[in-house]
Length: 297
Image (cartoon, rainbow, N blue to C red; front, side, top):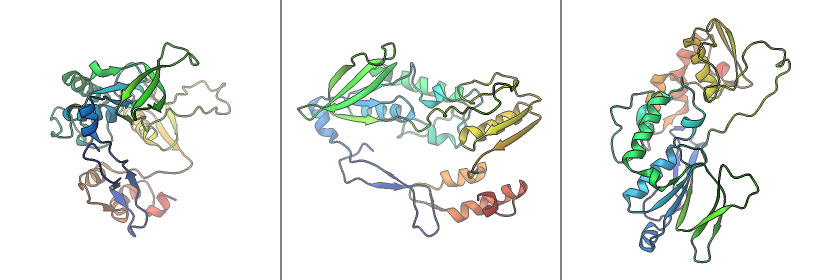
């Protein structure tokens, strides 16, 4: 990420197909010349105040670089502050979610961290490193252009300004790093008969399901993404009478032990997909699937 300039490297995903012909890779762009930016006294623009943006801001601090962080919402924390529910938990081990890349994960951050615990940790980290002093919240970045001197200009407006109002701008940035997030808000779906339905219909984000609303109810969860799986667990823990998950395509769900093995393999230690599926097979057999091919058509 923030080392010396180099050719764009690639980093393979933790899981690779057995024939090695299909490996999902995350491409990393060429790093800007940080020494030149530091010498010129130019700040770096960081767009997005989720975990990626916060980590990047702190890494810039450690390298003696100034930054300006732009965040659209009124607080930092990304999807954990805007989309997560009171019942949401980190789906993998705590180490993946801590914010200082040079230090071990703090012992106060438990495995499968709850939303409030994670956001409290984020707030403490932001305060400890004075990141808010260089942050502009409630600000929508509407454009980026290159200055004549090779720097960058950021066009932005505060959220209280109507769309179409002339954007303000800040210039002189030596680089722009963008972290738009990867959990978009779900699309609106109109279901036939929804107007006559007397029960609760919710998207399952941002605490839109009232506490106690699922106890003793028959619950249908539409979809098979991360939030869908979360709400199956949420409904069961809330005392739902029955929970059914309806989806067009089943995704792979990893038991915690398998997730731990994949995440703990370490950099460069790819785990074969066939091995992952073999480890998942006992769980799927408990659900009535004879083999993984039947479970994941």
